[in-house]
Image 1 (cartoon, helix red, strand yellow):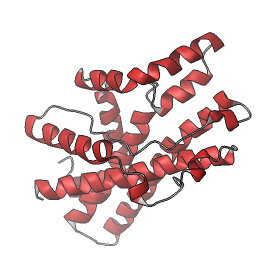
Image 2 (image 1 turned 180 degrees about the horizontal axis):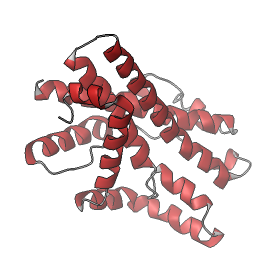
Image 3 (image 1 turned 90 degrees about the vertical axis):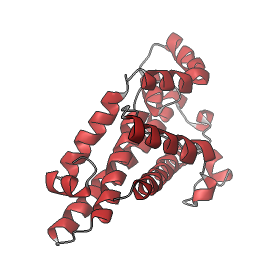
Length: 222
C-alpha cells in the first residue's frame, strides 16, 4: 500500500477519533450543568467546528513523515479545538472535571472496541481488502493512542483532571498553573522517548482487539 494512502488514512482516522473525544467532554459537561459548549455551538459532529489546522493536520502529518523516514519512534498525536468548559457550573467543580476528563478517553476506547469488532466480523465474512483493514487498524490504534495519551497526568491532558481531584487541596492550583507549560512538557517527554510506552501499549491492545490474523492482514505491523 502506498505511503500516501497510509498518511491519508491516518489523518482521517485521527480526525474521526478526536471529534467524538471533544464532543464527549462537552456532553458530559452539559449533563453536569455547564452549557458553555452548547452555547458555543461545539456540541456538533460538524468537523469544521472542531478543526485545528496545526493540531489536526500539520502536526500529525509531520510526525507521521518523521516516523516513516527516520525510524524514530515518535508518538503520533494531535488535537481538535478544545471544547470550552466552565467548571464553576458544576456542583463540585473538581469532581465534575474528573467525569469530564474521563469522558473523552472512555469514548475513544469504546470506539476502538467497536471498530475492532467490525474488522473481526468482516474478516470472518471473507472480506480480504488490505485497504479496509489498514484503515480499521489505524482507526483502532489511533483511538486507543488518543485515550491512553490523554490519560497521562500532565496538564492540560485529561489525566491531569483526574489526578488533581485526588491531590491535597494545596497542590491542586499548582497543577492547574502548570497547564500553560503542559504542551512543552509533553513534547520534551516525547522527544526523550519517555512516552513510547503509550504507543507500545496502544499497539499491543489494538492487536489484541483486532486479533493477530486481522492485524497481520492490515499490514500495519507485519
